[in-house]
Amino acid sequence: MATVLQLKDLFTVWLAAGNALAAVWALILYFLKRSPNRLFWQATVFLQVLMLVQVALGVTLIVGGLFPNSGHLLYGVLNGLLALVRVGWYTRISAAGPQGTL
Image 1 (spheres, rainbow, N blue to C red):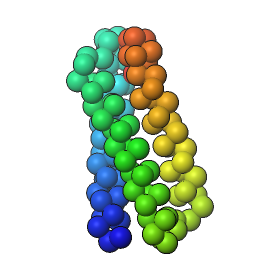
Image 2: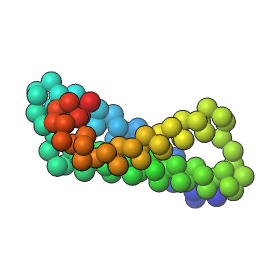
Image 3: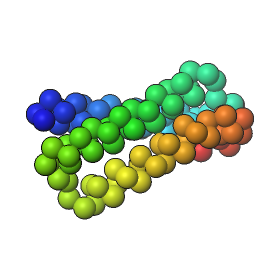
Image 4: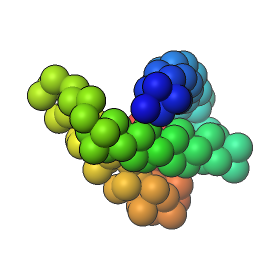
């Protein structure tokens, strides 16, 4: 369980940094009125899949007896659902051009 917890913490750092960079990137594209390129969408999908992996690690920790507080659990469930929606609607979102970045 210690390894799972370390992985979850590592992914948290990557997700925080990655989402901050993606947000700045998206705002720049939006204000420049440019459509996101393939690399932007690959990074976005990677971050969403990483979020799903982190949710799976969280579930593994819960099954192993390490329970988070209820706020953390709600945050994980909501982010997991949003990640599934974003990955599932990738084509529709990417076709929206600069508006899709927001």
